[in-house]
Amino acid sequence: MVNPLHRLRRFWRAGAQRAQYYCLLLLSFVFGATGASWPWQQTSAPEFLRAVVPKIAEALMIAPIIALMVDEAAKRKLLREFANDISSNIIGRHLPVSMREAVREYQSVSVIRRKWNVTYTITEIAGLAGYVKVHTHSEWELENCLEKSQACPFRFAVEKSWFPEVGETEITRFGLEDPYGVESFDYHKGDKELRPTLEEGDLVVTGKPIALPPKPHAPFKCWVECVEVYRSDYSTPYVAASPVERLTVRVRYPEGRFKIGLQLSFDDSTNSPLHSAGEVLWELSKPMLVGHSFFTTWSRTDRDQSTSVAGERSEGIGRRNIVALDRPAPHAPSG
Image 1 (cartoon, one colour):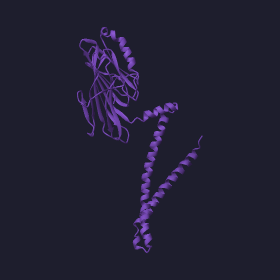
Image 2: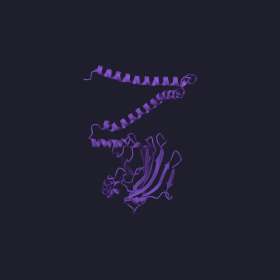
Image 3: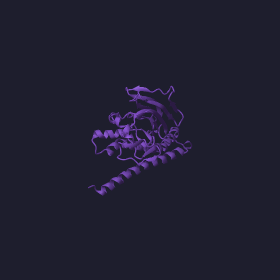
Image 4: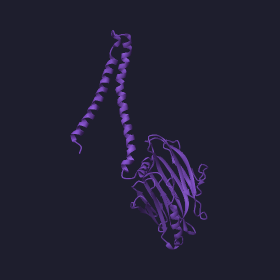
């Protein structure tokens, strides 16, 4: 057991040393101010002393001020480095060392999405009861959490159509609102700047590098839109590539024709959705971390028209869940 008197003596010794340090700074300032204001030119001291002593006195007066400023900055820097160094070990102290490194990677993420709103609009395709067309509108606010500017790849990727005989996947809009008016743009389908390319054989991709200023800064608003063809019983997953503080998922659909659902990988339940005619809205209060995902699902309420594609739907969902975390899951936007 630690002796309380020993703790008290150690505390008193540290306080006495600190008081001694500040007394020396105060004495240095007093002597310096006195020496700098003394009328040396009117004394009989040698010319050398009359020239040098006032400068030494000025230095003695300025030194304590600089020492206090440097001391405060050094303490803040030391505390910040100390906190960064031990934070992952504190949070993951019960985990193996290899897993603590993974925790450290989570904490080193420096670009986040403050708000992310995803809107799916499901429409039926005339004459094709087994398929639907889905328009996705995704918008979010990017924020740099570092105290220095950094480059950020603004990228959108979506898997090419699995049913090209019914319709091709199209990226129809890609935009950014720079609050400082430097990098704002809004490309639409048909603009020469919006030229999606095919990457890795199955991803339709468009992107543009942007620079985020140091914090604090006004949020950068981003938006993307795409159109895809799905089976009429399907799901769209999204695996987060950056942390999301607040997520809103809205689905618009033909009223009475579909059943809509939402599943989360990071929570057992979702907030009660808001229902209105032909629309359902989820507002999630729990943040998404890198690797978390949500699944928006839909199925026709007329089961006779969709039983023929049930097996294909299951096969598709299995394939769609094996996507790398640094890019979107199939049919999902990426910032």
